[in-house]
Image (tube, rainbow, N blue to C red; front, side, top):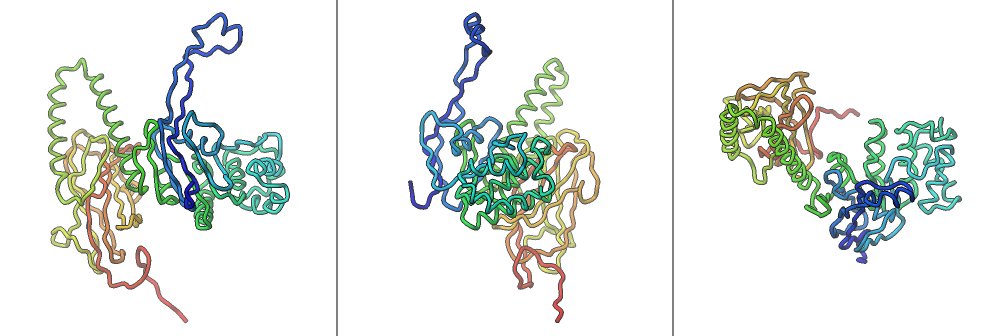
Length: 429
């Protein structure tokens, strides 16, 4: 194992038997032999990756792609059919909510059980007990049976134990989806702290935002194989674009089936196809390199511009300028209660500002024909290069069009301060 690595996975393969109709007793196995038929289903098909000491990575992918199986192989809950997994140091894991807890024992007793599974002695647990209870915020319930706990309380206790065992490697599977907003923020803060202290972190999550807050690298697993490995933003955009395309194809297939007995609608379908083609042509305007888009396509963002007071496009924004963003769109199919969104990202990937028309103004718009929408922003950005992502969603927050990196602009600020933005301030002695 390389000196700088905490985890090394080489050519990992894992298959499971999927029974078509499994017998539940010996008698049934003898009488109904055909019930024991099964098929081998390959979940992992030879994945390999390395994680350096102190690195935080995220595993993303659709349900059933092999993310959680990979994490369970890392914790040695299960073993691979072939390939090797090497880990260096003490491992702590949050694989399943409340795993290892006994429902009839108190929270305090379960701390002893859970921490001992992670390799702590009773003396070490006693030394950490106060910190675990304090972090979990369960002082009033710590001596109650855990069967009386809510799922959020389960998560608090499990997370508090896992991060207080001084592990070299922390493995997390979707655990942060549970719990209130304040405790989630507390968990993220603690993860950043232990990451700075050199703990290696591997997170499986469907929340791209969670991974981007913590991880410097993401691995996209697709059908048991690594499809992409790199910066979280790049990997997540490619993954979401792929998922949107799959959803679009699924919708198109459903529409074809539903319209199979409607020959008169074929002309309308051709008309819509032509409109989509026209929208695609307009996509090649002022967008920066590496632009990507995804969505179901009922409407398409055709152009995004920053305009000056005379309506002329700007590429350089100065201190005194308000930022006037104009989003042009084409409608291929009517959309009820559409929501427009926009996010401004600095060149290094920091998300500086984001909003949408529903949250900001509590308004939605029915899209029946092509049009434009304008957003005014007070310019408080510091000098640098910025990119814009623009979106159209429906009332159920399904993505109709997500236009990634649709606009690039530069800010020339006279403010000589550090950070992402400037705010009005004064010093007083």
